[in-house]
Amino acid sequence: MADRSRRASTGASADAPKAAQPQQAQQAWLAEVATAAARDAGDVPVLLLGDYLPMLADAAVSGRRPRRAELDAVALLGRQAAEQGISAGRVVQLYLSAARRLWQDLPMVVRSRDSEVVRAAAAAVLHVIDDAVATLAEGYAVARRDLVRREEALRRELVDDLLRGDSDLGSVVERAEPFGLDLARVHQVALAAPGRRLPDTDTAISALEAVIFDRLGDRDVLVATKDNLLVVLAPAEPAVAGTTAPAGRDSDLGELVHGELNRLRHGRPWRVAVGRPHPGLYGIARSYEEAREALTMAGRLHADKSVITAHDLLVYRVLLRDQPAIVDLVSAVLSPLLQARGGARPLLDTLDVYFATGGVATESAKRLRVSVRTVTYRLERIKALTGYDAADPTHRFTLQAAVLGAKVLNWPADARPGTA
Image (cartoon, rainbow, N blue to C red; front, side, top):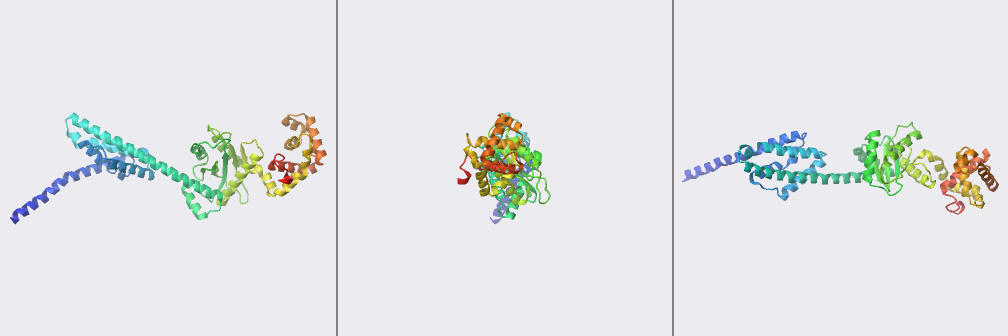
């Protein structure tokens, strides 16, 4: 009786390896298919196939469609591929190559002579391929959108910290590195303001990045939005210690940005302001403040230029540093013009153009579209009211400084300087 039990036990254990052999052979075959498919797709990780090949083999044998849980697992693999930075094309190629290789060596297809069996198996396999690849692509797309959102959030935070200039230097340097920013270099900031509402920011950023990367390279360049403005952080030519780059180089960046934005359908007319180049983290914040100030000043001065640099407005910055003094100057020198018939504005415009033309009355008349006699009459009237002669070199500087101050203060449209 014991011998019979021993023989039965020995027989059962001998049958187990026989049953396991086909399963082990199938796993080895599927592993070979997966390795070859990964090689076809450019050495994409085999793990991204998950249980895709067993699903295909099962569908060919039984006609079973993939379950929801199995497709969810494929979607997760698509997300993992996106997070690993593998292109969507290579991941899809991996799945299609795996299906092709499996079908070529599928035993029931290779050995069967029944066309109906082969047709049914092909239909089932194609259903699995269709469902799996679509789910894979969907998972990949969702992950890419999440990555873009995260990167955009990190970009906005980095831009805020860079432009504020008071953040922890070590932390900012560490976060700037993935964006290719070397904060030890000399950078400058350009700001672009749309004439109307800000258009699709993604389109504008993509357009700017493409042209700036092509011209300046993809390192040390950052394009983002802040306060309804487009912000461009770009490298500048290194300046000699204690100096800044020539103004012409600043306008180069401004013209580049303005030219590309003007090609967009929405947002025109654009105005671009460029700060001067400065080194280091705090130099970025300084260049940004200069660009903001230039943009604001250009609006207050009703400048007709589309591209303004901080160099262009240095004299206005000097004037505004002592605003009580410039208010006092405008009030003391120009307030008498308010007594003129027609107000102070025509006389101020005449002075502005007269100084811009180097004191040439004929050229001033052309620009003002009046007669030369009108220009000379207005200059005489200004002399009579204020006591300052625009043709006198000793008076000219005072008058010109007062006119510039009036433009900065938007006088006389705003309240009188003396009561502002």
